[in-house]
Image (tube, rainbow, N blue to C red):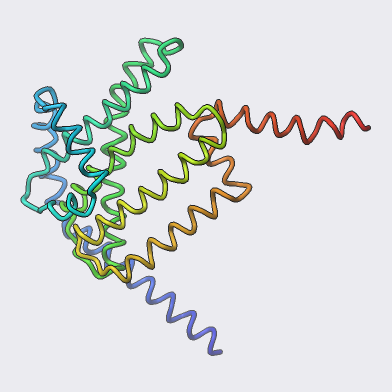
Length: 256
């Protein structure tokens, strides 16, 4: 009986948390959507005028000094620069993808990459911004979508960076190492953004993201994690699993 009562209380508490977060997101959604549409239109025009050197310098500064960088992010109603960043990261990823597949990619494939990658990057940014608000709620931080979106927009630089890392991995274990380090660093960036952008309590945030870090490590060292890692570079992953299968299966076949 005691177990059932505690389970019911736990379920009701979870439901309350999800409902509160949903209400918060709904309350800011109309303003965010209308502002984002306006800034997206002007951002498209501004992409061509972006200072590439400053763009890359900011990205490197964010990677090397995340605490200082995220502390400097302010909610001023200006979504334009954040959207430009995301579009540029999407275009950069598309360009890298074309270069790595130059021998086999078609004109249609190249155009599709240049169009779809920025759209995908924008979708990921808004989705992760909403998820980060949930983490902020759990850690008793602010529920500011603009700040969350700007922080995530800066983190999207990991999108092209990780693509390059996975493509240059010439063996499964190098791919494994890159995957583990990059995934853990992304968790660290989201933790830092939640703590310093959205003012979440460090103690609670450490527990939440510590659990995520342990989960990621466990996935990488599990049997099912091999499939997850292989999706990041199918050629290397397929070769590794084929060699493993050949070593495990062929001796058994020869004995029979």
